[in-house]
Length: 617
Image 1 (cartoon, rainbow, N blue to C red):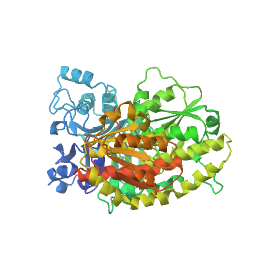
Image 2 (image 1 turned 135 degrees about the horizontal axis):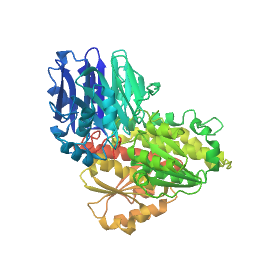
Image 3 (image 1 turned 60 degrees about the vertical axis):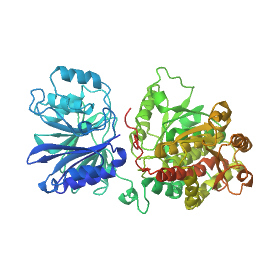
Image 4 (image 1 turned 90 degrees about the vertical axis):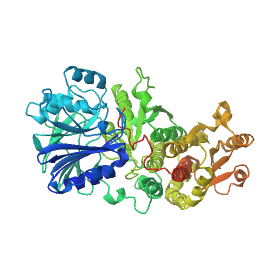
């Protein structure tokens, strides 16, 4: 995923572009670049490094009165990280093969890259990079006949793959052209001019009005107008939306990193997640599902599909649906399902697509497969109006607020909360009895913000434990039942941001291979809440590790003196209903990973090789 910002304005265009790009730096930070007009000539500046490096290289451009420009921060797909591969890319200059100077930035991947590259070289084009993006500039320039919009459509007719594009033409210095297919792109409409970007965060400082560009659309934006058509040049009606979050929510505030801020926001976000959804009588009201009651009542099986953190949440959803709603449930890896040649679905199955961004490419591919077979699918997403939310058309928003850190934290806990509420909703829908344990579960949902706040306050204790383990290159994470996926999520966090070889396993599988790794230099994090049905078995696993001189850190329930006696360190969490233990157990694991990364001298907000949302294959 890459960051794209374009702006057509009256003044300070470069400052606005760089400020917007800085806000999108979480989307990619291998290299950066800009395209601007200098004395009527379209110029490109590219650097290896971050946005600050780009800003330094552009010193002197600020006073040239630019009114239009595009900038980009890269997450490398095709080609090494070097200046030649950085964006923007341009067509041939002074070449008979390119009839116009075209400069563009791109988010996505071109599947027929090798084929198009070979054909362009055969036709005499000179290619200066190893990227797929440069090919698009050449294809558009080759198709140019005086009409830029037609050139974009004609050039893209030859492209197979995903793209979010912002394009400048030498002979049209008043408009930015754009196109979208599978990669996020939005317009920002403001009094200081208009924007095109891969994320509204880039222009939120100037406006709360945006237009989401749909797949298969191209168009242009000028100082005070915009125009959108489909690939057949038929005008497309667009809706101006209000961005549902403030710029202040995008600031780090007193925190050193966005990840720390978002961990600390979880008490408030959990309250957002159930506000208005738990009625005074204890029933659950989910407006996004009410119109689909007949579908859900007739469904015999449910399956969760996601990637990374969202897949871990979906695995927890399987347990919640089976044990709370008393329905069959399973889960699917989005990247695998997207590429299955002959998928088989159980009779009367409904799928639940989980995504923080609502733009995850693997999940969109899986969703296409599911819908091709006419199987109903519901969205569980955070970003309002995102592509997955629009493609499913029904589901539940998790209301976790803006999440910027690459490593997802509050989105995971709010996904698990949403899955709990959906499981209770299905229980109501199927007319199952309101047992006493259901009342206890609902009561503990109301207590979650308070309990999560306790964990935020205990962060210094977790930091002290992180200091003792930050030097270990390997870590085993174990959990059982509903907390097996919690262990997977804890391991993922440590792997993502601290570069520790952390592996998550079901504790029951430990004796089937992983125990061979255990020695004094290979510690284990075990998720062992006292209310877990598998508590005794997990303690047995702990004893087996200790017998092999392995160090153990336990995530355990307050006051559990039994476990204190048989592990090296304990991270304490407040008691809560069994079905909610993943929400509380994961928060200190997030804190642990964060502090290990900091102690190791790493930036938790910029893990190498990763970007916030995987919008490329």
